Amino acid sequence: MSEPLSHTYYHDNSFNLDQAGSYVLLIQVKEASFDYAIVHDNQLLVYVQNTPPDELSSPKHLRGVLSASYKKVVIGLSATALTLVPNGLYDNDQAAAFARLLDVQDDETILAEPLDGQNHLIYKTGAGIISAIEKFGLDNIVYTAKGWIKAIAGSSPPNSDLYLNIAGDTVHLLYFSFGSLRFYNRFEFKNADELVYFTACVTEELALNEEISLIVSGDAYEWDINVTRLKEFYANVKLNGLQVLELPSQVGAHKILPLAALSLCGSSEVR
Image (cartoon, rainbow, N blue to C red; front, side):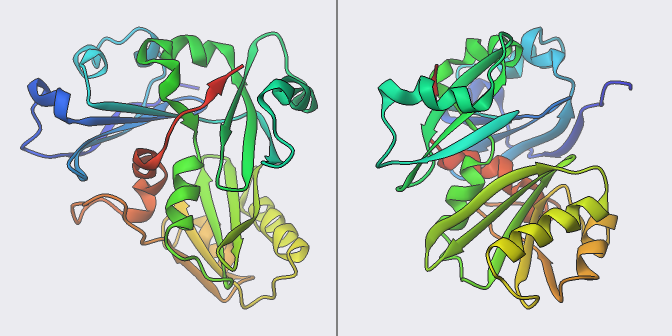
């Protein structure tokens, strides 16, 4: 498979790298690429998708962008496995014991962070990814979906909505009950039928009826195969219009939400 090519989805004319000290850099690392955004005073200045991963470890085209001194840097990392631990059971000294549930290999690193007011998240990712981004400061790392979860939690989510975020071949499913996180998990799927299957498993587990609204963000469009297939089984499927940044009209709120919401995050603890 050939490397993905960078695609500058948006570039504001006011962007000036000499002013990086007043900007926020957001990076979302995916399996075979990364997206990044540069923000100033809650306004989107730059949004770039599908940048080859080598640019993180050995930047060529992005040497200036990735070496600038920013006001804040937040890097979202995907997980190869994760577990949620209620805050009442979580203890920093016991994090390693919980991590054993994830079958950590020699080439993987464990990270931990509070997910919300009730749960801690423990997850693992490739050690090579950590090496590629440690120059940005490990205290700037967060779990890839943390901002998305935080943004939705702050939007007063109704009991009638199930949230999906599609990131390549991974779907994140999130549900709140009376304002509290009731369910979060991620699943890898190979096609639209598997996406429907995992969604159905979650709605059945949560005893949600077919009138539930599916609110979709990430790699999705109104009439793509995944959304179309979901609409065959659920009457209410729509793209997530939640905005955490000031966006130009050509940038879809649902598309950039997982990346933009990283601006709401703190950091992880590397184990």
